[in-house]
Length: 489
Image (cartoon, rainbow, N blue to C red; front, side):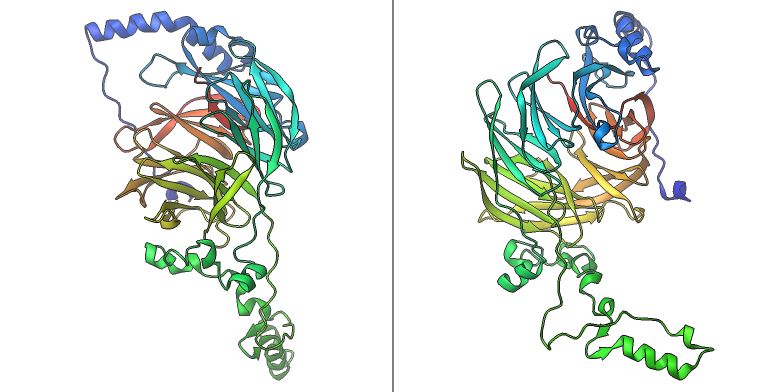
């Protein structure tokens, strides 16, 4: 049944040319043969077979974040992935793994490079810290300074384009933390930004009257006005009268008891039960349960603006870097329970946001005054199942297609960007080839996918006409991978 929900893509390739073109390809393959044989050997399980020489022989290198033992993973540090040849027009070569770039505990679940220095920054999710590493070899690193405590479960690091600072997002306590970087890339003391408050919580409702004051969907046009079902913006069951056993002034629990008494023992079981309602003063607002803040990602935008997501509170927050910390500019509230996780910047000027819990893609853009608004959105797929959790979002090289991972069904949703960049049309839902696709990146004609639970990375061919990923080209074992970061050295 699951296969019936998926659209099987077709990857068409032109026939190889004959004559001189064929001979040139054969000669090139011979020149690259030794490097490819080392990659193939590593792919069969000999990870130690790929050394620093692989890069010198023209292979593309990626760094692998992962979970170590204290987070239930099997990684032992920041890994190294070898993917094809650097001078090849395509990225369809074999996959291999080299020795760790650096051994470390603490679960380096996210890794980000410095834009100009040979320095990597790792969010040590299991240790609550940020650690910098300096390059000491072609693909080897050593700690640069001591770990800096930043908060509970840091899961993402974004480095400023000028290399002067970085922002860490902490899943556990919702913290958004700025650290300055010196000329050598060493982090300074952490400065926590203003904490988030729930735009749908009791305090926000009492103080502001509605989430609209936060720049929510209500402030920028209703979800129905964006071409989305009106239900996207409706309150969830926590705000439903039936969930509390009342419907207006009618006590449903009391009515059910009366019906069961009248029906007698033989038919009483046919009357549904309702939770006992708690008497509240007329006009009083029902209690709204507190929701935890879960910051998940930061992204530097054009105009020296910084966007962060809060998956727990359904917020996208915009900041300016004041040098001594972040200054909050605006908050945009997405529909309650959507869970904004990761973002990608589209060249049309839209910030695209994938939501982990509601499996949607939203577009945000500034209006003429500079205020950010929710301007579009669509489901990733109609075939998502309960329990699915969206993960990463990435663009095709021409920014025409969006790829979003769905953990659970372990699929990749493909959407086409239309219009001005705020409209999306579903194209396909395909198998990711892994279990629990935590992260993926586009490398030339290939989609690389990290399977956290299947402990592997796979490559999928991208159809140049339709943008749809094909079947798995290659796969390689990788311990508990959580992110893929290209080494652009």
